[in-house]
Image (cartoon, rainbow, N blue to C red):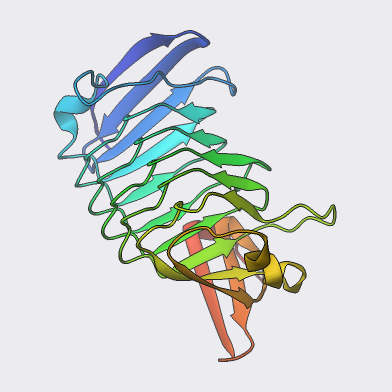
Length: 232
């Protein structure tokens, strides 16, 4: 794919790099897997801002944290490869009206999704993250099309699958798919919205991809943002 622009910028943890391809993929990378991208505001924008209407997908390589407002209002953005990201800060993807799915945490055991991180992503239909994820206030509020939430990993150490507040999912009506051990998690708190909890069998089937079996409907669902592994 042809690179139409690229650059380098500095953070408190080292250098970060970005490239934008002709097909609309923005890649943000670093030489340090613990690098945190800087925080922005509604008026102070990242260096690639002039291309916001051309950016269809974003890929993070060796990035730990996505700062405040980084992709706020990127209405052309449809997909994100989070890589090793462990924290998505406030309003980082808020009002991204074309974003359809989120698969985060394939390479991480602990994820923090900060307040309003995906606020009012009106086309978002499914999200997936590992157990022990923290979802702060209004993180998915206003995501009116969100229907499915997948817990993609399992722990034998008794941790609850998510830690959320009473308004994390305001305005959301969705099914949360998770192992039988955690089916009664709803008893431990009110996460906002109208969430139902359903037992499911699941497992990985590739990079940033996993399968889930619904015994009630005898249906296998494959979801994620990556590729299904090859079989012989």
